[in-house]
Image (tube, rainbow, N blue to C red; front, side):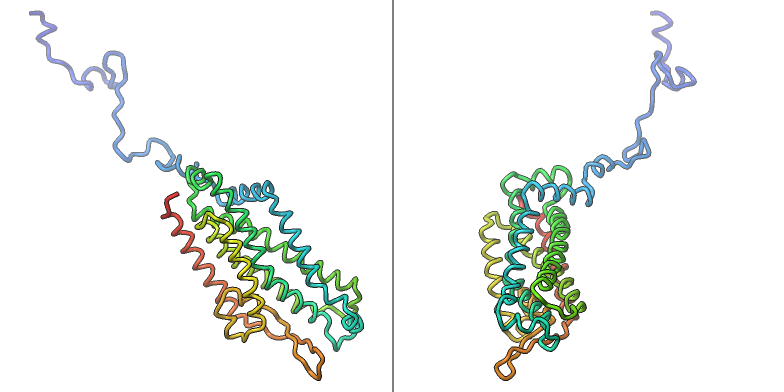
Amino acid sequence: MTSAALSPALPPTAAGTDGRQGGTQVRPAPAPGTLTSGRSPHHSHDSATPGFLRSVGVELLKMHRLRVLLIAILLAIASVAMSSTNLFSQSTIRSLDNPAAKPWAMLLLGTAFVNAMTGTVFVAILASRQTDIEHSGAGWNLAATSGLTPGALCRVKLAALTLLIVPTVVLQNSALIIFGRIMGISVPLDVGPWVTYTLLLALVNTAMCAYHLWLAAVVENQLVVMSVGLLGGFIGIYMLLSPPALARLLPWGYYAIITPAKVSMVDSHAVYEYIQVPMGWVAGFLVLTAVIFTVASHRLDRIER
């Protein structure tokens, strides 16, 4: 038996002062959970999750491909055309330069009726168009692979559609004012009521879009979404003719609540006047809608697709 066989095996630390054995450096394994670099263990997951602004940009590209902007422009043109029909009547033409007749209030009330009828149809088309692509192309699963849950995707879609709804409403009312000037309204514009109505209409349209967007995400058949939008248009018109106490109880009634003008019959003549908008009720409706949409969109993450 040789002396090499009798000699005990040296531990790695005894084989060399630098921890080498047989010419190979031995490195101790890191303890579980120990960071081996400056990055978080979840860094790869976080980097794969798209940012909110980037996701909104993707939705805007989808809108461009789906011709959503063209649809919004056509609907806005149709709304302006329907809102200005009263300007062609002989009785209205004779009062366009009469400050006592308040032609701007008349025009504002006319567009309020049209928006109550077409507002929900407008947002139903946008929500359905933007969501149907996810149902038909397995977009929910593709978004989930990049870390975007169905609920988060709905919130991104609402943000992207808001960027379309707000300028559409502003351009629509601006075009209506310009057309009113062209048709002969020479009295000064009542800036306050028009600005108030434009701002509130954009907010109410966005709120109604949130409801229809959630419905479009839950129901694959988009005819259901369109039917709800059409039904909401009829309800919106009815709410303009109903007591304000009833209009406050329904989402569609807020197209009537935000209208700062009314008409009454005095000696068989229509008298237009401006009224105060109950801002407290409008703010409550918007806050409640935000809470409902947030909770409902988070619940979408539990639905298997």
